[in-house]
Each structure stands twice: as C-alpha cells, then as structure tokens.
Length: 247
Image (tube, rainbow, N blue to C red; front, side, top):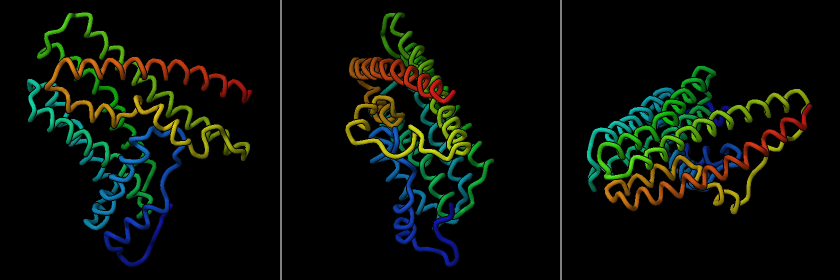
C-alpha cells in the first residue's frame, strides 16, 4: 500500500507517514515490535530522503548482516570484535525492517522484492548459529558436547522460520477464500511479546555483545536455546491443530 504520492516528503514527514501504517503486531516479539520496527522506521525515512529503493536497502542490510557473520567466524572474540558484530547485526536487522517500510511508503514494493527480502532472511537464519558453532569450535575451550547446542539451535531456527512463513501464507489463503478473521490476525498483548522474546533474532544480535566473555555468552545462549525449544514445541502443536481445524 502506498502511503503518500506526489511531492517529495521531508525526512520528518516520512517518519510521521510511516508511523501511521505499521505491520500487524500479532505474534511479534518485544524487540522486533518495540525497538526494531522503530529503528527501521527512521532508517526507512533516511533511505527515502536519499532516494534509495527497497531492494537497495535489502542489499545494505545483507552486507551488514553477513559482514558480522564473517567477523564472528574469522576473529577471536574481543571487546572490539564483539561490539562490531553486535552493531552490524543490529543495523542489518533494522534495515531488514526498513526495506518493507520503504516499499509501503513509496509504493515501489514488488513480488520480486519480497522474494529477495525473504531469501536474504533465509540465508541469515540458516547461517547465524552455524557461525556461532564455528566460533565456539575455533576460539572457546569447551567440551565437544557443547557444539551440539548451536547445531540444534540452527535446526530449530530453520524450522521456526519456515513454519512461521508457511502459516502466514496458509492464513492469507484461508482469509482470501473465506473472508474471515484468522487466528493470526490482530495484535498480541505486551506480556505475550515479552514471553516470546527469546525467539527474536534481535535478541541473538544483542547477545553477541557477550562473545568476548565465553562463560556469559554460552550461559545466556544456552538459556535462549532452552526457551526457543519450549516455544517451538508448543507452537508447532498449536499451528497443527489450527490448520487441522480448517478441514
């Protein structure tokens, strides 16, 4: 949906326009809902002023994210490298929100752009935990059994990403066919957003700041792993029952 056509907006006007049309907050974890989308709004307004296209913003997001993943694998964690990895991941994630917001603002979104955005997301989700695994293997003094944690986390992240996208598409199809409000529509309350916070990619971005303190990073990362596993076990059952109820 195009928010505004005609004369070029100022950056402030673009921010105001964007604030009136955000995606549904249904199911969104707290970081994405309250922080990342706001950061993305400011970045989208800046990109609009610079006359960038949504695909260009997606490309910059990919450069930031995969530069961080490269640093994670290549450098022994230090205060400086951990800060760089965290900053690049946070910026890349915010730009990932900005490209869609810019598309809505300018009306320049396309199916090809949506495909590009989700493909970059798939590479990101499909590599971040493997990069952490390599980092642990190269630079942390851990028992080999610990390497199973990021390996299994990677499996869960991939399943979560795919299942979430599939449920969104199935709900859209069901809504189109029947014109009814689906379970995935509307908005989630604050407590739910906080409860599902461990599943937010933004939390992984922030936690990488602890890379230079191995015991702290492995401890927090392990807790996120347990919380994500518990959420996924509950969510998959719920989604299956929802889809089954349609038939």
